[in-house]
Amino acid sequence: MIIDYENETGSEVRKPLLLIVDDDRNLLNSIALILERYDYYFITCDNGTEALSILAEKDIDVVISDFRMPGMTGLELLDRIKKINAEIPIMLMTAYAELDIAVEAIRKGAYNFIIKPINPELFLNLINQAIEHANYIQIEKNYKEHLEKEVAQKTRELYESLILLNDLSNEIVKRLTMAAEFKDTDTGEHIKRIGLYASEISGELKMPSGFVEAIAFASQLHDVGKIGIADGVLLKPGKLTPDEWKLIRSHPLIGAKILSNSSYPKIKASEIIALYHHERWDGGGYPYGLKGEEIPLEARITIICDQYDALKMRRPYKPPLSQEEVIEIITKGDGRTLPEHFDPEILNVFKKISSRFEEIFNSYIT
Ligand code: C2E
Ligand code: SIN
Ligand code: SIN
Ligand code: FE
Image 1 (cartoon, rainbow, N blue to C red):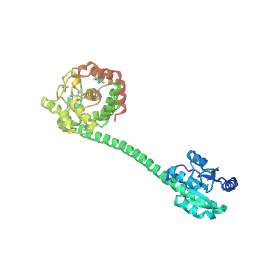
Image 2 (cartoon, rainbow, N blue to C red):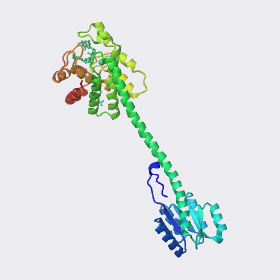
Image 3 (cartoon, rainbow, N blue to C red):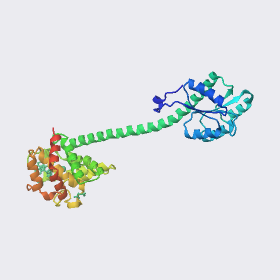
Image 4 (cartoon, rainbow, N blue to C red):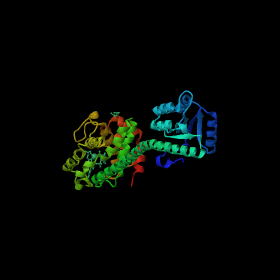
């Protein structure tokens, strides 16, 4: 009788609750005896007004009401209940002689009628039918809730797909930058590290999470323009000629061109970083010789990350340097690199968290 819609709809199964309304105490008692014997849940009352207040408070599944009662009649009660809840099955109890009234009740929306005197077997049968009907109504309601849950579930799945897509785009970044840098770096680890250093610095600068997330992604693409530089120049073990330098110095412009006109904020950030990551705070960088805060913050952060990592690792033109040597070059200068190249605030952050840089370097190495 009780339908298990747990599996279909994920809803709680609830035992149906009946409301029996009759001014005849003896009849109520005999109905109660039958229902108790078969383990039904029910509430009884002896007038329509009380029935309505019970209906307002309790979750009644089926109403069984006498026809003739002092005060509100069964038919009036039917009308009132229908106005409040049109779906609840209502059965009216009537004597055989009043069958015409019972027919009118059906016309007004009663679910069924029960003829007095009550035959227990028939009575239970009719009640079970009504309960089943109530269950179907409940299933329909639950189905709506089920749909809502389904929407929530699909939203979650969509979110998970977005995470996958994010992984996918990270992998594409890695492969794209490797295409550009395979030439002068061993693996994609350098790229990953730049993103990690840049987010560390941004976090220290208390930048909003959107900025941190964007720079973690975008800084990895800073050297994508090296894809346009001939291997003979990029892989040259020794010093570069002035013409070769001219070629190298075009890699920010090439990178910015590759990344230009995107509508994705993270790619826009990549374009900016690619274009300005060799600009120096003192105005001595390239391609434009911008100075101080003319240089976008993202690029001011990335340059120090890039230089730290380039110094730490082996390049075709240089051996790897120790942490002490690298810190010395960045904070005190070596003639080629000078502290004046960096935003002083960012340089201070670098000094403060340089051991974190070393941890990142040592964790992402092949
Ligand atoms: P990269 O190897 O990724 O280096 C990035 C930046 O790190 C360099 O930008 C420079 O600021 C710093 N850096 C790298 N190695 C050293 C070093 O030994 N000493 C100091 N003080 N700083 C260093 P920069 O100078 O604008 O160079 C841009 C790119 O040009 C380099 O990217 C690299 O691909 C290429 N490059 C630079 N110097 C040479 C070289 O002597 N030979 C060759 N074949 N390529 C070079
Ligand atoms: C170099 O030392 O190879 C170039 C110096 C520079 O312009 O950073
Ligand atoms: C900031 O803009 O929040 C600090 C970084 C800087 O401009 O030096
Ligand atoms: Fe570069």
